[in-house]
Image 1 (cartoon, rainbow, N blue to C red):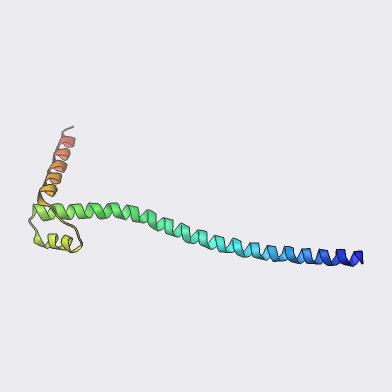
Image 2: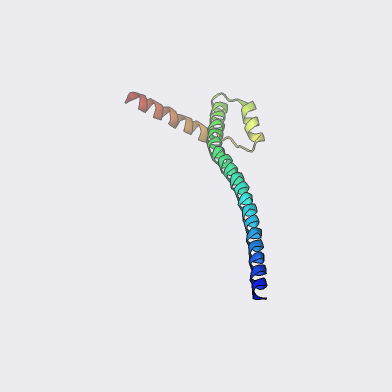
Length: 107
């Protein structure tokens, strides 16, 4: 009787080990796919930061051009996107940039 008990106990423990192994493999595979998705999202966030800087520079250049050229179409385009152009602030920023460029060329 003792030998039957040991035999069936060993069989049950072996089956439990196999179930745990299959569960572990399934969880590992699921985690790997989640890690891949997260990595892809992080890459997109990284790209978005660079694009944000380009976008900001583009908006600034458009605002400068609209003030310098008194272009109402560009101001309307920016206003449609929720960007308010203040002629005095933009003109001052453009003057500061021009002064900085002239100073750097002198050196």
